[in-house]
Image (cartoon, rainbow, N blue to C red; front, top):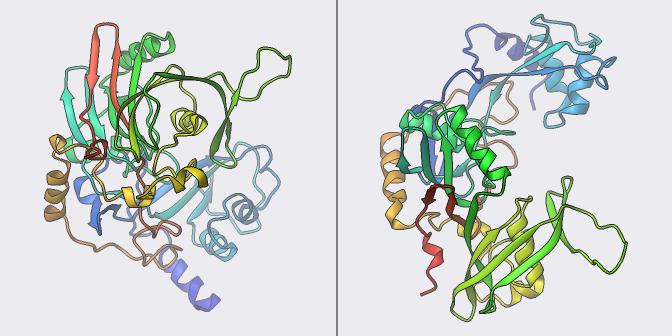
Amino acid sequence: MKSKRKREEESMSMGMGGIVWQTPANPPQRSDYIFQNGRRHVRPYYFEFIAHVKNRWAGKTIVDLFAEEFKGRPYEYYVDAVKCGRIQVDGEIVPVSYIVKSSQKISHFLHRHEPPVMAWGVKVLKEEAEVLTVCKPASVPVHPCGQYRKNTVVGILEAEHGLAPLFPIHRLDRLVSGLLILARNASKADLFRQQIESGLVKKQYIARVVGVFPEEEQVVDANINYNAREGRSTAEMVDSSTDTPTKGKAAQTKFTRISSNGVHSIVLCEPITGRTHQIRVHLQYTGYPIANDALYLTKEASGRSVQKTTADRAAAISSCSPACDVEEDCANEWKENSSEDFSIDPMCTNCPNLAPKGYEGEEEGLWLHCVRYSGPGWIYECPYPEWASLE
């Protein structure tokens, strides 16, 4: 362990001088990525996080605010960061005893480590004047959110294809793969969103589920109640014969079996509404959950799966079919950029590791894939993934 004096000396030497700080205005570059053990990492970089003091933060010292609201780093780190200017208020260095006031601007300059994602490329399916469609790999977020900024579909497309700006017109959960439609200007994005909100757009996914799914079409009409704290949803059937209020939002999904091998089934999923984890929860509700969905796979259903493949193991399976040339794209990237060198920051709580704490394990991917979106006068499709073949 380093002594407090040694830590303070390193903190002061690594203050603000000589460091190039990035903001959201800095575009991702091809050289920002490191490929290692089948995963795409982002070379750690210096970044300025900006926030404004909320009313409930006002009256706290700058150190206590960070220690209580952002628990990912130890108290001593925030003390050192304030002393050396890595944390500032309204662009000024302040003492550790400084009391913050409502609406003040707080800047946190840190050495940013993004979580890794699966190393598959983002394959462009169709490039039009106003629309771009791609095959999104599982594990990659669509746009910057949380700890992800460059390791996103939007970031990768800008870095590796020079495609920007892009406006996603629908969302796919991070663990879901398949068709993603992006508008190339704001007006086109608004048109798509209006069609979606008006119920004019039909969405189709495929899933690989546990067991032999029924041959006849299944329609699930069950409310979805999302628990943000637990990060999962539950389904509740609406009982029209009683006046008991139900939780959650109305949700409906249509399911049709495509094929089955006696152990797993490939099911066409057509969500009529768009709720959080809707397809996953409604499949669980029917008794045929996605075969590698650890979040919604019941013990009973898991016992019916001979392979017992989890989302962790599915990460080794391509999200797109060979027609997407994903493996070739990934191999090319590996050859072009195999350097694992990156700057080590003595103040950083993640260095010398490449991945941030908590992301050292295998990445995940779900057997749920978006295959088709259609609306007034347009249709966009994506090839099936390899796991859709039950042979």
